[in-house]
Image 1 (cartoon, rainbow, N blue to C red):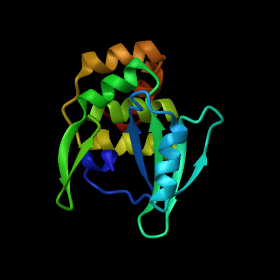
Image 2 (image 1 turned 180 degrees about the horizontal axis):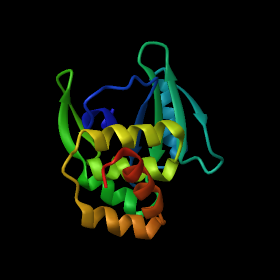
Image 3 (image 1 turned 45 degrees about the horizontal axis):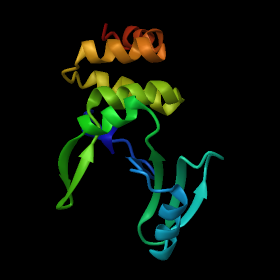
Image 4 (image 1 turned 180 degrees about the vertical axis):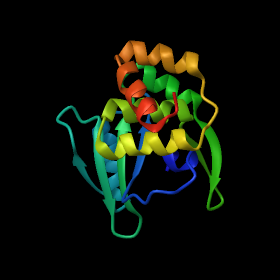
Amino acid sequence: MAANSYRDETRTTSDIDVLMTLAGTPMTDIESSLHELGWTTTAALPEGWLLRLAHHRRGRIDMVATLTDYEVGALARAHRVEVNGLPVKVMAVEDVIILKLVANRYRDIADIESILAAKPALDRAYLAHWFETFDLAHRFQRIESATGQS
């Protein structure tokens, strides 16, 4: 959903990604609450910080718990939008790009290309800091060059 906020053409997706702070709540407690609400959960990683949720009426969600200072900061930078009359926080465009570069899947690269094609204003200093921290500058430069955005 966040990537679609920053590009000209919408890409359909089969799930919603949610980044959340656990605030000391064990993931097992969150899982139990979700089961009570009719969700099925599958731990996608043994550490338990990624849950894949499914609900027969509400669809699918990938729930990711914040583990790093970067993720906590990215949540703080998110801004509120309204979706179907409900307030939703959406990641800043720079954080969408960073997270997609980290994932580095074909569809993530394509998402970055389409975001760059829409020419959003980017905080280049913020990007440079995190690109250096996560060693992502080369990936981003390759995408910018390939799309003629550099």
